[in-house]
Image (tube, rainbow, N blue to C red; front, side, top):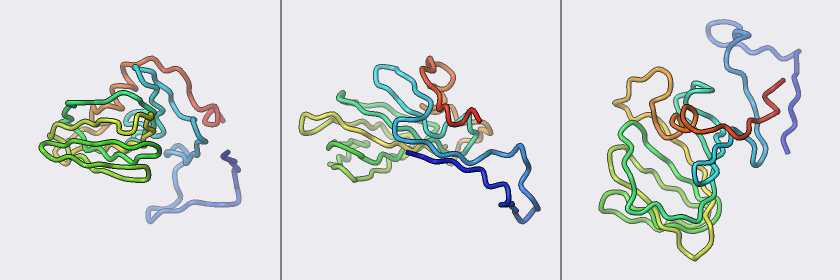
Length: 162
């Protein structure tokens, strides 16, 4: 559960003065909350490339399907944190066994994928960030941007409709 309080007595300042009223606002999401897209697996975008306009994106999903042999992202790096399950990731010629609570960094431009181990679905938290060569100012046309611009939005966090 997430509880939101608007504390009007608190004033935010930066080295350039008070924060503008129309600047990005902080928000918190509970378990299972976010912008939900279903493209064979249900992806919950916690922080998007385009909607929130940040320089990284965060999503969560559960899967019982392998991504093998894999795919390549030319515009973004990926970080996976395994919330539940066990997987073998491949990145180029390297393989990594990553168990619950484990982390892996997958740089852009190298084919990568994963196999689920142990016969149980995996739940993953994924962070994507633009590759250093990416010069885009709104998103970087990565995986999350593709969800935000091309997949049907099934749900939005009601807590942000304040």
